[in-house]
Amino acid sequence: MKTVMNRAVFFDRDGIINKKAPEHDYIKSWNEFKLIHDIIDVMKHVQSKGYKIIIVTNQRGIARGLMTTEDLLEIHENLKRELFKYKIFITDILFCPHDINENCDCRKPKPGMLLKAKKLYDINFEKSYFIGDCETDIISANSVNVKSILYIKNSCTKTKQVKPSYIVTSLKEIIKII
Image (tube, rainbow, N blue to C red):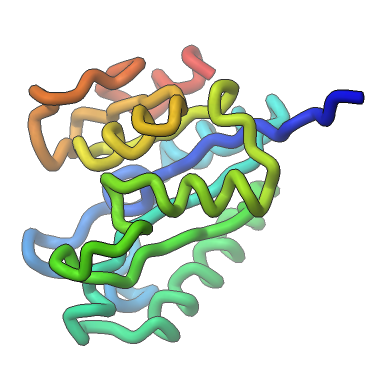
């Protein structure tokens, strides 16, 4: 008997769910967190289609001593509460607290957070999507066969080396894709 695997939509956080901090800064508290309201319709849509919602985010500010893990967990609990007001249920929020030079397996572009989610929630990567705004998001998704959606309005870098499955200039365009 074949097991039915779950589908997920992986969301990068900064630039997709909330407005990014100014360059070389980090979102360190809930007061600095500004939700991008268009993402609510996207999350409602993917949830209605039966996808798990999993946020995967690099949070280097912890390694740099600009915030604590507790600060980040408080931000994420507030985010879950805010989205719950719209009847959006977050399956999980996975984060990498490491600095670039630590060479961990979880920091995007490496797929460690995606692999962890697959193991925890029995995710079928080939039926899943990753929504991100940076080349590292696309590399991570492509490396494990997750369909990648690049939101270019807030793009960190030009994607010359990698090809996303889809490119959107508006978050609401994602609804037509998924």
